[in-house]
Length: 466
Ligand code: DUC
Ligand code: ZN
Ligand code: ZN
Ligand code: ZN
Image (cartoon, rainbow, N blue to C red; front, side, top):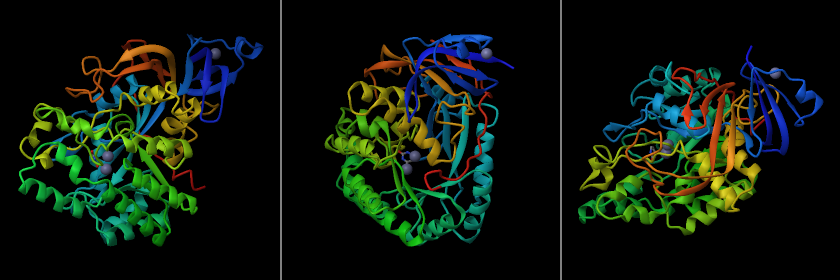
């Protein structure tokens, strides 16, 4: 049995902050004790990590990644190996990735394919949601089996007609099934039918540059879809989790539903909090780097997102990490913005960007840990093993230096992508040491983990509802 003590740090969880020493035995948190107390001095350890002057926080839980994800005639550029390694560098020790039901195929086939991609290569722990791209009698039956085996959440798309899109009848049926089996429906809420009309009109008018991606995917069409998804969930009697919320009007829909006591939840992502739509208009074809859906919005929307995070109308910040290289991938959309693969890289930077928000006074330290670790763990049935620092939890722990300075750049990041959407951004705070189930996987500026250390984690159902 390997034992490690982390000594002298400020332990921050969603619930409290306290100076404590942390004892790790065999991959699990065994005890917390006051620093230098008789109890803590009595621990005999193989290894001691000095966390004096640092934060000791739970490993991040990124509940929204797309590794090796087929999209727009290509696939996202991070594999499970490179993507989970980058996650570790950024202090994220659990990811929940989206397995995809092949259109016309079985959920099982999609899930098996995603297990095959991830098995034996991940640096940190991983779990799966399932994208439903074909809701029918047989895939609905399979939903019950997936929930029973730990895939307890399902993403549906109101966008992307002909690809992932479900119509309202399919959505209602999936929600009814989820209401019966404890599953959580995750919604990509954009009116894709209307958006496709606007896309065609823009292209017909010769508006082919990346900036038109932001113009056609209107905030009102995100809000309309969010409203419709909430009403459908109400009719079905199911909970609802809306992914990658970017529009102020969509936050308002969520807030109204929550004020009415409905089990409706929302997620936003760092790109919507820190970047805005003007990026899409960068000279040349540079704007393609910022094409994702939902799209970046005018800066005014950011205040509503931050407010939503403070008031708990938004519960989770995930990355929607879906990287495509500029060269050869984003470039597929030269001359037609609708052919630019949608997605931004970010799995490595979520903890740092949200810490920057703490430094800037937008959120408090415990809220940082809540939205990045504890809430996603509870939302997706990973608590109490993940998302907190407490006896019995997995020893997924980050020693975070709140004073270190760093500049984000493609030259130094570890994601397998040829650009950074945060190039040149200065951050106060930096991950120093990362433990994944007690093993040191990041030690200062060195990756000390290994491909295959990360394990698949079956999940229980949403813990916000019990
Ligand atoms: N949005 C993205 O930007 N990328 C992947 C899928 C999605 O919904
Ligand atoms: Zn010990
Ligand atoms: Zn989506
Ligand atoms: Zn996504």
